[in-house]
Length: 404
Image (tube, rainbow, N blue to C red; front, side, top):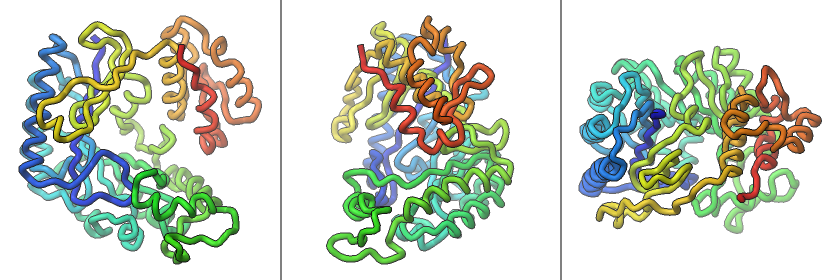
């Protein structure tokens, strides 16, 4: 049986950030404990439904901030996973965290439970930028968290950084990148801020998003935006994007996915599995799953858990939005997710997986974007060029097929 990945959603955070549209919120200790109890029931009920002891290659605790609840509860969750699933001895077990929620005691506990990869949400090395983002930590807090993680024995650490922040300049972005590189983490995720609907940032910056580059006056809530509140203009954002790869490459980080860089051999195995359609099981509030064969025998299905906390705590784990993927759905996902990787997608693997050559399905899109210099075929793989990465969403949209 093919090894699966497992995602555990911990929705709790200290404070909801103004840009965040994830399923997350603050909650007291009692609610957190009730949630962990429900999570343990959901995990055990899956075994009863599936009747199989599935091999597991990676476990990823995401959120929210998984390091908000008591560390001992993480141990309970991992104990249940090892009881129900065949978690491989060398499985990658990752945990997202935020500075301000980590202590020496928590980090030592995570290590004892088998967590072997830590992701720290730094986001910026500038205190002013962090304050405008509404983060709970400072640059000094992050540095303390990173130091404690190293002292606890974590030798596989990712640092999250965000560009195109309010008041951010090209110089402050470059300075932050170099400071993070000097710490020598094994992995760096570098994302641009996206203004998502139904967030406070959308209410504040949606108008500027429309006006950026137009030369119009920028206002918010009827008043003019101060320089420190404004988002960088489009040209500055493009320069940040280009400089990211240049600075990280100079420090020995290889770009292996559009927004992810790693030292050789330190790529995130969980995310690589997601981008290459490895089956995954999601447990927790609103978590999604993708299975090549579901417990009821259906092939290639996707579903999610309820996003209603009250229902989840009451034991409602019934799969929702169950979708059986068609051949076209799977081909589209194979291409769109695979093109996020710098190595691209294998022409041979496409043929082996779907029984038809890639060009037979996608010849118009391949011809169009190779002619424009946005795609290239190299060593039997179709991949984005450097120019193609910068407009990847446009390119990938042409690989989305209408469902059968």
